[in-house]
Length: 120
Image (cartoon, rainbow, N blue to C red; front, top):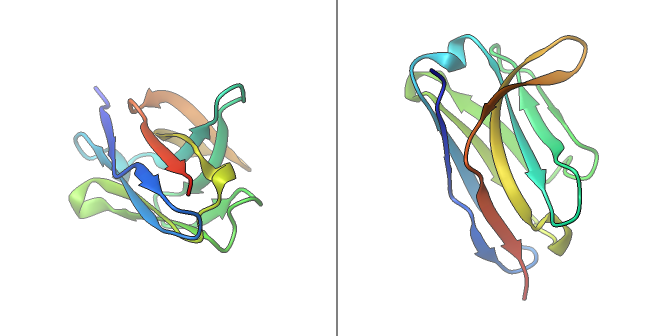
């Protein structure tokens, strides 16, 4: 059974930084690609960043140059470093296990989400 637990969200001022963590059960990081999604009120859930089991990454245009996804397979943890945060980054952020086939596809493995609020 795949379990994903996010942490690291909170309230931050515009221009600030946060690092989200996603702790995964077992050794799923050696099997699956991983992704971070976010969902703002009234909007659809969107892919923010993805990383293959080999470490290749891709990002949504809205976060390129500001967010960095990484993984530590030994710790079974995926990270999302978020810098230069903007109010429009405010959302619930979710960790996901998935796969790549030309692009990232989510499997039905989700964490409970962590709230990120960017506000002065």
